[in-house]
Image 1 (cartoon, helix red, strand yellow):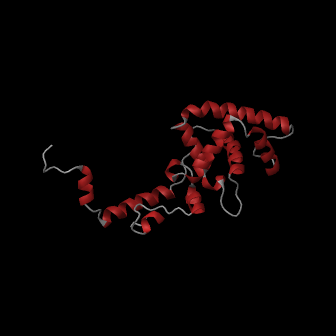
Image 2 (cartoon, one colour):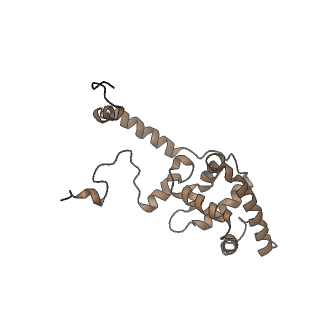
Image 3 (cartoon, helix red, strand yellow):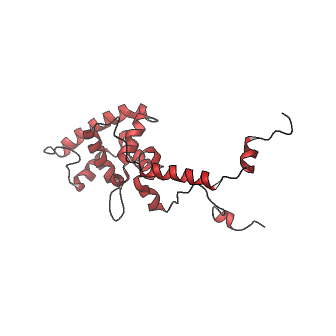
Length: 183
């Protein structure tokens, strides 16, 4: 390669972003944040209601928003439609087993969502060693703290809870390790 050619990395290092480009990026980012959650594509409304009842016990609403407010169910639906589509059968079978356990523990109950919070917790304790519950807990955490563009973390509730600042550009020092020059 001739010496006079510069790499893409060098080009981007030499060309500073203009205020207009940064403003356009911020505008697009703000639009993405404000967008209403998409309609469910994989889960039925009944499945979503039952799964949301479980996720709302994994990350409950107290003095701060929980899984329901963060829209975790939309993250789970998108995960099952895209990167974890191979886990749909595990959700289907896991929910069947969870419903069977619910009927065993609470024979007169109508649904997981209709159970009292203490009963929901008792149900979760009965299934917490299953592969399904492990996956559901993982999806709940990812949906609560993940990037909102993936369907969860509505209104950035997870990021606000941990103090994460969502900025396009970070200025040094990035962390305590960058604050002072090394000697």
